[in-house]
Length: 224
Image (tube, rainbow, N blue to C red; front, top):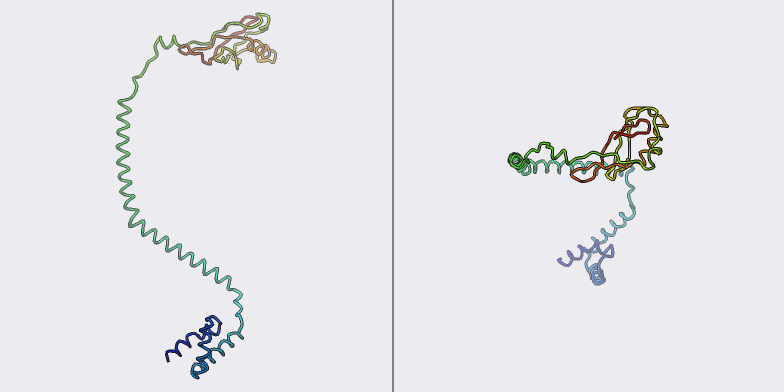
């Protein structure tokens, strides 16, 4: 009887040809000698033929839609479960830790602020008031000369007051007419003269620095 049970358990693989050659020979030999196993094997073979005759089943037209809906619903449930798990983890673990950490941080910030205030008070530099020494160490630009002499400086029918910007090398790089005519002729005369003018640059503790000066033009004269 044990042999029959072993043989019958292999009927499915035998019909599919999924057993070894030795096992196939043993099953065939057993079927020749055992009528009960032969009868049951015939039922298996009939069932196989019926299933083969049915053929593949055509899937429903809305199968794709059903699958997408099912996948979407499963994703939503998975996300919801994850959010619930994170909320539980937050309430039981992270939230108490962060509350304690925030309290400690607030205390630390108060202590650091007090220390900074003390250090700033003790280490603040002594205020320095302006003195005559500081004033003497700073000089303004001084007009020296214009290349080409008086004739090259042009003349002005009306007085013109000009603020000039002087580089640390003593040359004019910009100017602004403060008062007087602003005609094209006046600007051309100023351009020509200021371009050829030289100044002693402003100084700060003996170091040449950019500065500004006010020049007054009247006729052919220049006063700085």
